[in-house]
Image (cartoon, rainbow, N blue to C red; front, side, top):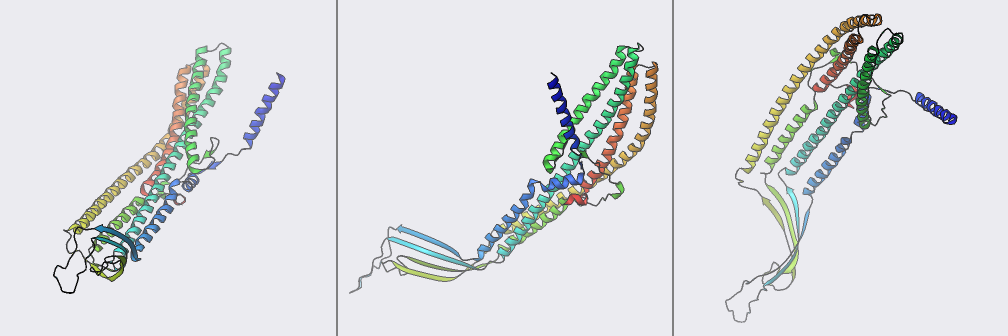
Amino acid sequence: MMKKTFFSVMLILLVSAINAQIPIRHYTLETIIDSALKHYAINGQAAIQQQIFELQSSKINNGWKPQLMLNGQASYQSDVTRVEIPIPGFDSPEIAKDWYKLNLDITQQIYDGGITAERKKAEEASLAVSLKNIDQKRYHFREQIHNIYFQALLYEQQINVQQSAVNSLEKLINEMQSAYEAGMILQSELNTLKVEKLKLLQQKTTSEAGRKSALAILATHSGLPISADDSLLVPNQNIRELKLVNQRPELELFTLQQKQLQQQESLSKTTRNPVIQAFGQAGYGRPGFNMLEDDFTPYAIAGIRFQYRLYDWKSNQKERKIIQLNAQNLDLAKQDFEQNITAAAKAKLEEIIQYEVLLAQSREIIRMQKEILLTAENQLKNGTITTATYVTELEKYNQSLLNQGINKLQLQFAINSLNFITGNIHPNEQK
């Protein structure tokens, strides 16, 4: 028994010594966001989109290279051309009804009306939109990390207030225990304080679980070894540092999408331009170009081909009209987005002002509530009030402390949220 007790004590001391050697790490919002962005899986899409663009461009350029096509054909027809006029001393040749051809066709683009150049510009516009979409996803990912960070801070604030209240109750319980043992108070009076302590410990357990969950999410996204023992620093940004200029990535995305539509319209116009090609054909078959020769023979032809669609039933015009209507829709969507951002920014600014007022008021509330609590504590010790009355005042004081801490976090959260709403995020977060 002595051996087991000895080893248990040594194990506890060893674990305590190991834990004591692990330093508490302090993380800032910028550090976690920077690391999370480096580990963001969507980052790889930019390289993939670039590869797709290069392959598409190479594919478009192939239009200027000679196009080779090997064609084969075997056929049988019910009748062939004959010469029915009898000519003395001359037998007219008879063409076979089974024909065989193997051709190599070569086409070389000479002039395409600018289609290739416009298609390449359209691909460039598409790449720009794709890359900006990735930037937009990164932006909203930053905002997601920001929200989880403040959620963890809120849980931490609750834990601190709850632990402070537990400490105060433990001190008071020890003092009231002596009074109970001396027969000055009833067991029920002491139990009321103990029950309140247990309630606070339950709340603290819930808050700790919420904080661990938020920290686990931050650790997963950032790749940092964030643990429950580590500390998150509260951002401290002044409202005077804020800018209400709209710099959201969506605005640049709208601009790039408009350019993409303009490029599509320009490409559509070029499809009406004439096309000139050089062509050649080399083949072997029966009959060849000499239809009256019934032997297998090689043959070849070369020339220039001109193509121009005289009338397309206004299909091209309608296509350009559709593109223009899409551009109008996009412009309306941009206006709606700007209005929503302006409204959200104004509302958030009012919220910031509200939290500043609440913070100023909470300081005075805490000062007065503390005086009330000290008076209630003395009255409890003197037996002039019940423990239930004291617990009520203790809850009011703890709630005032919690409200102040929450208001401080809400103020910083609102300031940072306004930066995200307007796109004026911290420079370190733009990496």
